[in-house]
Length: 615
Image 1 (cartoon, helix red, strand yellow):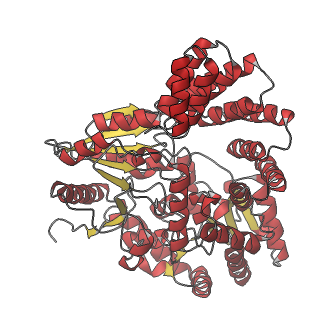
Image 2 (cartoon, one colour):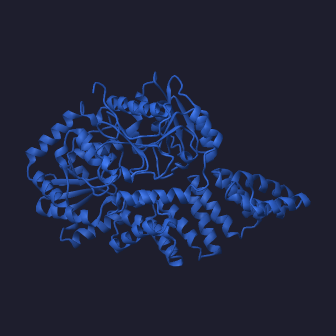
Image 3 (cartoon, rainbow, N blue to C red):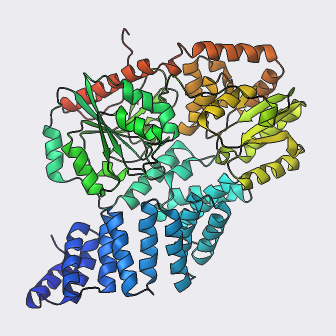
């Protein structure tokens, strides 16, 4: 039902149908709740006033709201051609270009907007976002700081600032900033704190993480409702002779997802399942991308489609179970799930937490990651897999083992390593690492070199703790095969806490490198424990910093035990559940059948455990 204002404008348009201003005002009223209708209204207004910069701008905004970013960018550019002095057009063009994966062009648009008004806090924030994507972390941090000076209530900039400081291991005012962001999540639901950045903060609880995700859905997915006719059709739909499974991801490319799930897609039972891939990320033209495309029965590139068009495509494909592999990570399009294109919808693998949304029915997990006692802190029902929630290819690319000297390592010292991203390193964890290497005099710590600022800060932090900075050695980025091979130059992988190694842990275990972890209370802090149990090394799971330090020191002093652990890992690659991809695929398909069975019986989603064949 149109609002009274809309009704009044519609009456005025009947009296004066060739007045573009009336249609422009009507489109503005329609834009928030019905961008499709607003789009048509602005198109008519533009016919009556060709080239009008404000109508072109609003036409672009309607297209942007519909997820039609290429067309939106074109309209913003046309608006600027008509009037180059519009801050809003430069800013909105930057937003569209960022969505299109063109961060350098987006940065140029934001800078053009700031030349018009240097005091625009939102523009500084968004410039920070694209500079972050370009790896210019120092400049990104400066942008967030400027944004907050201009507008201290720009809370998402505060979260961005702290998360990028995590990436460079800048721990100044660390505790105070975390306390403030946790307060914002609890007390200010409009703050729009990014869920992935929030769950990476030490001290956040599962309950707070769920609350953060719920606020995100309420703020970002407002107005996204499933079409009633589609819901009726979904309720009436019966499965085809084969269950149709759709996988939605932005990462069907050269990405850790390929290490985990590519072989799984190839192994799906084609007699019982028809597998669809929905790609909302960039095509990197790699061989891995080509393999992804062939791994599915049907591969759809939905990146050019609006949210509504993408949801309709999935619905038209008669997908029975839609699995979101990206969640609230980079280039997320989880908003598609809000439009309910499939009867059963699943959160899995990409986002290590709850989506906090009614549109995700199940979370694929295991009993270590999410014990039954944690169910209240997840919006999804649990589908507990029997071994581990994480799939793995049963082979990985490998290369000849390098020498320690070629890796910049000492030949005859104990090498502790951690190849997790630097943002997972916390001050408390770093304290433990420094205690460990101080107790083992002939030892070094080998870390992944993520960026130059983190490298400098970590060396300085080591020195502040009485450890010579040269005892920290950094491993540069390299190919996946060479990265796997160099694990064999280390003695023990020291996991991060509370955000564990995920794919990095599987890489280490595959390479035969023992990994020591600490079990925490949230999803992110329990992953490595799950992997170790599936690899047959549960004794490497600790439960406190003190135990973690003690076990690390004991292992470093006992080379025979480390050798035995390494041999168990290497032998276990052929039979341990962690790397048994056919077994995992079979269990996953059982989970899908159980989800679908409840749906066919018109029963609501309910947590369940998958029993392996024969049990």
